[in-house]
Length: 325
Image (cartoon, rainbow, N blue to C red; front, side, top):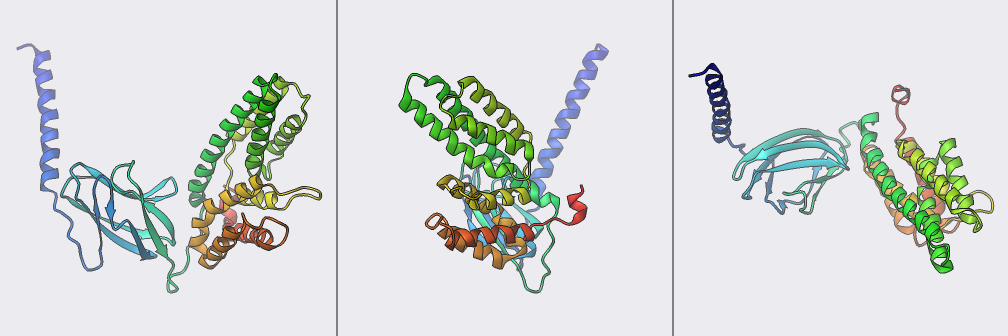
């Protein structure tokens, strides 16, 4: 038999042997047994039971059992970040997941990605010191905000393009201009503390306000602003500063519904982090946030929310060593 064929057969035997060993090991894996201090979770393709649970901060042990008919996984998510997971849980199999949980509000996967997600609330304990936040904790909210900005930035490009194409249709131009101006206000909090971004936003605002501005100039200014925005990662401190600025206009300025919506988005995005370090502040923010859309006038909920945003900045401030990194 030619040496080449022998080598091929040997390789095939090795692959088959490895696959067989994997299947054998999987079939012999001992199922996790639910103990007195374990939290039992049952998952299927479409749900998990329980779908909402509250646990104290600290070490937690979950035993996840697959009651479905296909291989599944179970994850604990902080925004878009996967904190913990157990993958490849076969039908009828149970797997244990032991982890340290910080106070906060998390989501859990319940079967397939298309299935509704569950909720995991981790409550702070008076006996347990609250852990300080690190730069790693900021990555999840920053990534979510970046995705939101990207989506809104694309919509802005569409509105500017529609404005340029509607030169012979005044009502359509008015609609496109109004949409572009509203989207730009929703993006304004992301420019806080960034002189270049702020200048780009101001330039685009001026062109949109000028009905005689050439469409090409407006399009170019919009593209420059969008490109610069897409290259930035906005951390919570800047997000909160921008939200506060949106609710505190300069002399003669006004607060629009878009300003309120943009500030509210930032606040909701960062509430889980605040819940970890200052639960009392988080509860106050939720109350003021609920009243903000109904009372955006100076004073009242708007003043309270502006104060909340400054308190959130202090609560989420990073240690000096992380600020320098």
